[in-house]
Image 1 (cartoon, rainbow, N blue to C red):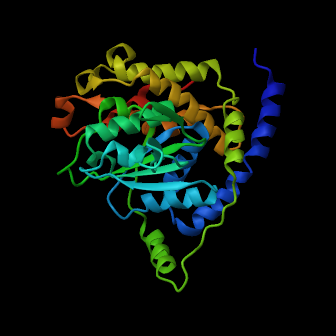
Image 2: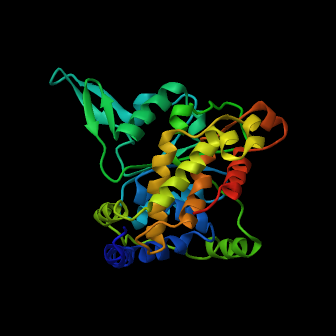
Image 3: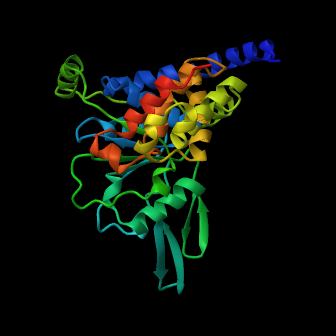
Length: 331
């Protein structure tokens, strides 16, 4: 039996604690026009402590959105341009010899920040990806024999360009799986682009003020982790995940030849975390099926590996996820 009193109290806590998000959005919207879905997903990543992979053609304000968010949160921001000649030491740092003391001293790299923008992440070789993977998963890096913890909040926001594939290294499946969300960024509407044109070509460019402290975010994460998830919602999440692995056993036999590999258990965990964060953004202390439907495409699109048959028919993982969402019964 669900205690409705506790849910009501939780609703009040969420409504009160989510107020700071409006100040944050107001600052971000001074610079970013449109792209509501992108900004919302960045906030979900912040609240659910999950890394985000952004995919879109150049010039869609991916870098600007991340930088603007970092400025509004009073957090340290580092942009790292990934290139084929990048070394792990360029990312995490290295030990530098001091001839006066005859000792090696650690020199910390750009990974020691709160917001890391890994620009064109798929242009760096495997050794660099491996170094980033430790930072993403363990929230620590190793320099020489010493291990250093990364400061909270720590968020990796990586971008990749879907057009140019020359000189790129496909991201390992293990690393792709570490990203909570993969967000596809699209072009703005004509009206939005007119606003962008006027705003970015004016005499003065808009400035962002720091309105939120990292401590606010860390406390908000504690509230997010307490948001109520009903048993029926948990079963719905499992139905969706298992439909990517065994579509034939879930009444989706036509998808069986289109899926090579389904979503991992990490997707199940991230689905709960992201749905709670989405509910928090909406000022609710409980998760609804709509929260699941909103976050599921971004959680599953990079975890469902399509078969050659699907590629031949030009069916993407996003198409498959949408068909699963359309056909699995909602509680």
